[in-house]
Image (cartoon, rainbow, N blue to C red):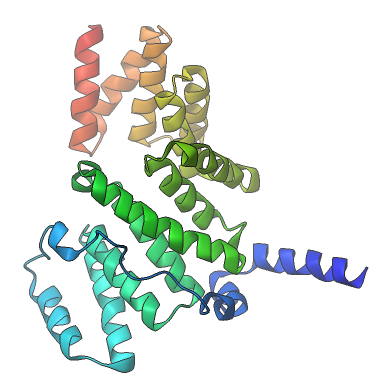
Length: 272
């Protein structure tokens, strides 16, 4: 009975703890066996060069000479600077190097999330070898985070699910979908999980389900234009052009993302 009560208490603590508390509880277990910083087949030579930015150049030069704690601080600065400039791919590599120096929970999660986000960069999507390399590393970090006590943490479940699905490995797809579904079970208001499941429903031809997912997203975030485009796509595939047209017109007229506007415009031209 005592063991059972302790188990329930531990689960509750892990679920409700904030990130700093959770790090203190699990980081000791994570330090034992962290992933390597870059998997075989992934090197900076395969990626676009670093931004020609004086602050980035300075940080890289300092890193080359740094040792100990100062090296970790520089890796953190590089990771943050590159991520803020949209270079998620290089930010992920530096985050991975930081994990080798300090395999605390938050650093492992950060590296895993960045590696997964890098998989969605257009130039990575065009290179299957890069997709596989970033996927392997994302999965390694995020699975390690789960083993360390983050089995029910929404950001870990979502990023791990996306890494599985986007890996291109068929047997991983269902694992990924189940991981993202678990996010909505834990928090039905997680808009990003709902949006991603809507995208996957489109890809698998489940247009009624896709429409339902995107409608839920728009109920929470009415100005989310990618969801408007997704809902319009579902409607068109269901033969509901009258419902799709105003959504597409709204995206064309108001979406800040040019790529979304162009896609919506092309779809609108096809139904006029």
